[in-house]
Length: 619
Image (cartoon, rainbow, N blue to C red; front, side):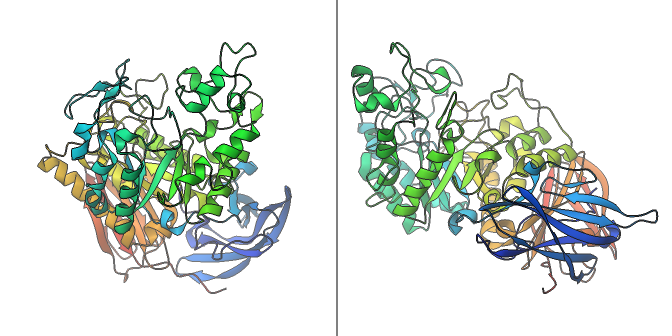
């Protein structure tokens, strides 16, 4: 299944940074076991017209042939794929390789590989681990108890159960604050996390604060502006970055702009929203009245929200706050309403302002479904999405619990075999340029989903963590993942952190997360390496992250399995090569012989080895 030609857009295959107008070398790797490849061409699109460049045989590395061609980057986003002439006794045949896979038929352009010439996200993002915090539920400082509970809220003790649904759900108020987070930064750093992502900190009338009443200050219930300044300063002192959460799609109905717009039809703010002709109604996020939708056709809104150093976007990226970036809520809906689609324009404007204020800031965007069409590298740096990782992983590791499966009417995810996990991951990741794919957030769960510990089979969360930390993208932990907190839906997952009731079981999971976080920092292949699938069938996944400095072989299983044998050359290993174990959980045995390696497992497990690096012939 996987002894086929390979290319993935990583540095092994596109060895130079692409610049517009440059001729960029692209490489293809063909296993000898595949058969005789007579000729190779790279088909690229120049102003949407196909162009073919013939590749040359670069050299042989063990059991692999390397081919190389040069692609001229005529456009900021260049789509390309490989065309191979394969010899056979009865004559040659033609095959295509694109970002989705290897085919003996024509393929649509949407799944071509992509090179983008736009500046990438800051390097600290691609090498990072994100730790997401829902401020009301993370930690309380001593000052929290002295703050008056707001009139909209239902006061809760730290141990009060969270209500998963109902009118009380957005009103339960636990009083976590920013100084409480500051006091726990050492815990976050100990997990190998490098980025703290805060869900909204603006004043609002809910515990989630996605219904902001202003964008000019930090909620006093969280400690106000000074608390955010203290948090960012303390995080930076530990080498941590901090990003905030911004709603470009809507405000709250209590927002100062919306109140002015509602009371004065002639006001500038009236144009910030979509009111009906008689002003009896207005557009809102999914029709929820408390979340009126912003109208990005308004030049005044664009000026106030995005344009220049005084804008909402810029204000908190500058002193004294010095945030390191934004995650944009429901970015896929921003600027889209009926026949209006200004999504790319808004995204570009946000990014332009961030670049002008501080080019070392990160712009991530929520897009929960098939997100790739909005991520060509020139707008959002990366996606917070679920389709290419979280959803297929849930389905492969699905347990028996009834959970909210990403808003579908289903009682939970269907259970799928490993081969379908690879198929789903490949098809949904294909349209992302590699540069963007490595900047996407990948998560087992977030504050908007059920928790992996509830969704998955026993020990499934550990298996998922091993896979998450070893796949392309930015591993993202939601606070409490390191303790295996439960949750049947997003609201139920926003459980207060159990700081005073931690057990040995909590510690075991914490230790695993911390070890994986350190590996992510120490092993270049886990950040910069390519991805090549070696085996996927039923209960077993095998893949390798390849890099010149050393590659990482990963074997993951969701249950017991008999011998799975792979040729050594498929893994890129020779008999005399040194193999070092990096991490394991559960029981997977490996037997290395002169030509193959065989794996056997006794239950849910993951095991990782560090292999020698890939040797690329010199051009």
